Length: 221
Image 1 (cartoon, helix red, strand yellow):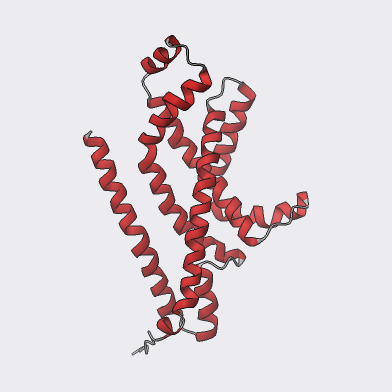
Image 2 (tube, rainbow, N blue to C red):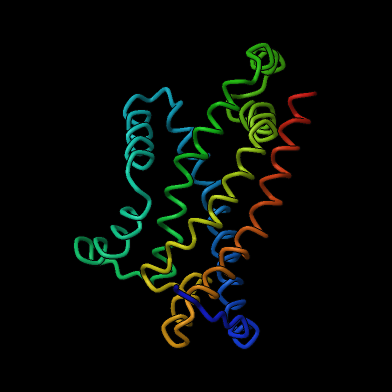
């Protein structure tokens, strides 16, 4: 019968090493979310533009990004950009760009649904009082759209925390990569990756529960 001698002491011995990876994970997620919020807004405005070529470009970008694997996109950014365009990126930068572009495509859909949910009567009222299209968008439409899409945006942040683990493939020193490095020297993958899985769960599960409660309260209103 197979037996395994657990050695959980490997975790406290290398706790600081693993936590340095977690700090990188959270930093990557925060930076990526900020960029994705801006990129998603840009993509959503392109999708709804009256200028047809711009609208087609926005729709095309969104469809390509949403219908290809994020890992393939990340590897494309890291390996193809230097080869084709001569743009040399660090693994950290490539991960930020790859995750930001991917998340922007989904956040754009959230923005678009929120913008389209704003009652048309408010747009007509804004024109009556003399607001320009730009003023109407930033003063009337966008604040309401963001408020309606906040749960979706928060859920995207949870996804980003998990997707950041893909950085391990290109040697970004987030927590999963730290676990891989530690596992190769201690030969304790079971304990190390179990601990890492628990860390992700402890971070993501409360956020996911909070988002569900938030959505219920918004629906009740």
